[in-house]
Length: 431
Image 1 (cartoon, helix red, strand yellow):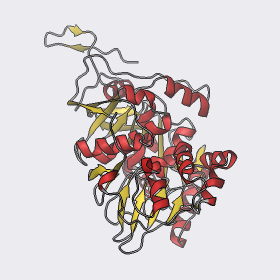
Image 2 (cartoon, helix red, strand yellow; image 1 turned 90 degrees about the vertical axis):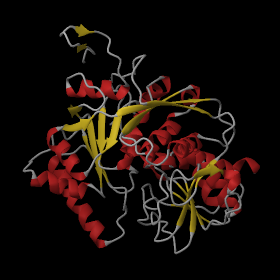
Image 3 (cartoon, helix red, strand yellow; image 1 turned 180 degrees about the vertical axis):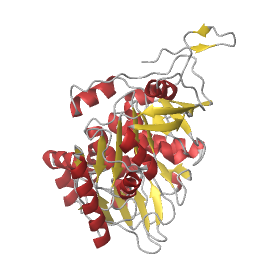
C-alpha cells in the first residue's frame, strides 16, 4: 500500500496529499504516488475479453511471442456477443478461442448461454473494490459500481495484459457527481444516468473518471449502481466509480463470500475538475431519443411515439431487479408489439424461473432469449427492419446499432414494459 506523500521544491515530504479514488487505486497498482495526467504502469487484478474481441486479442498475444497468460485464474473469456453463433464464421472463431482457453488453462471461461461478460465478472467476484480491472469492451466501466478502477481497452492492450498482468495508464482527472433526493415510483437508476448524460453531453467527460456520491446513490441497489457505472463511457468517461459501502459489501458476500479486498476512498480536499449536483426528487422517466445518448427528454415529451419493438435486457438493464419490475407491469396483460427479453446471465434466468417472473413475462407475450448481448449490438435475436423503431433498455442508440436505419429510444425497464403494453412510448406512472 502506498503512503500518499510527495516532496516539495526543497525536497521535504508533504504528508496527507489529497487524492481521488482513481489516483489512489492507480498509485497502489503502480507502486508510486500518481496524480491526474501522470503516466503509470499498473498491475491489473483481472482482465476480460469476449467472443467479439478475444480473437484479435489472442492474435496479438501470439504475435508478441507470448506462450502463456500471466495468471489463468485472473483471465476471463466470455462468449456473449454472437452466442449462440449465428454464422459459420462466428462458430469457427469461437472454436478457435475454446481451444486456446483450454491450452492456457483459463479458469473463467464462460461458454454460450452463461451470460453477458459484465454481469459474469461481478457475479464471479472478478471485480473487487480498490482494484484495477480491464476488459476488451467499452462497457467494462460497469465494475466501477463496486469501487474498482475499471475501464475498457483495445485488443492489443488486452493481449499485453494477458501476457504480463500489467498495462500503462494515463491517470484521469475526475468529475465529482453528487445526486440527492428520493426517486419516485417507476423512476430508477437508468433514468438518473440518462438525465446525467443529457446534462453532461456525449463527450462531456472525455477521458475523465466519474465519482458518484449523494443520498440517492446511497439508496440505490447494486443492480442500479451497475447500470449507472455502465453508462459512464456514454459521456466519454474512462471510469465511473461508486465508493464502496454496506451495499457493496453485502452484494459481494452474497455472490462470492470470503473474497478479500481493500477499498479506496477519495480524500477530503481531493482535486476535481468540476462538481455536478443533481436533484432527483422531481425527476420523471427519461428517454434518450435517436440518434444520440445525450438527446434526452422527459417521457411526457414523446408519449405516443409509435414503437415496433421493445427490448429489455443488455449489460445495462438485464438483471433480475429489471426483469422483475417489467413483470410487475406486464402481469395479467398482453404486449401490443414484439417484446424481446434477454436475461443478463444464467443465474438471472434461473432466478426468474424460480420466482415466477419468467412465467409472467411469457404469459404476457414476450419472447425470451438465452442470456447474451445479441439484440443490443444488432447481431441477432432482435435486429430492426428498415425504418422500424425500438424502445430499448440498453446503453446506445447510434444509427445502425440495431439495424441499418432503425430508430432506437433508450429508457428504463419500467418505461419499456409500459411501452410494450401500449405499442407506443408510454409513461409507466400513468398505468
